[in-house]
Image 1: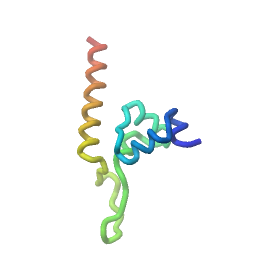
Image 2: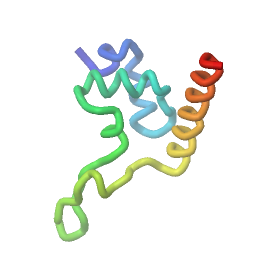
Image 3: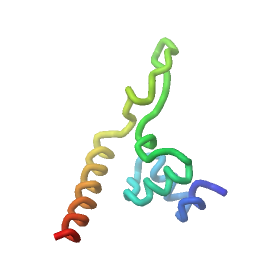
Image 4: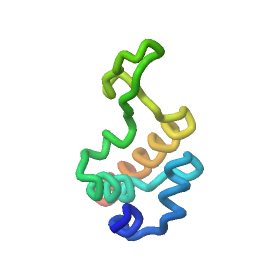
Length: 88
């Protein structure tokens, strides 16, 4: 079963997320993380090596572009506002 199938979405949508053309909803982030059996925040960090081949811990890197960070903040803010409206 592919990631797209596990997330009940299309392979092209997953591909658009992978190349940074689309940003998933919070719900889709949770589905992707669940399908990969990881915590959602791990989707936003990467582990690689520096120019000397020394492994850089994932927690010290951030692979999100500024555009993606802004979009994530906007979506989280919107979700929080919706929850607060329901409480009031």
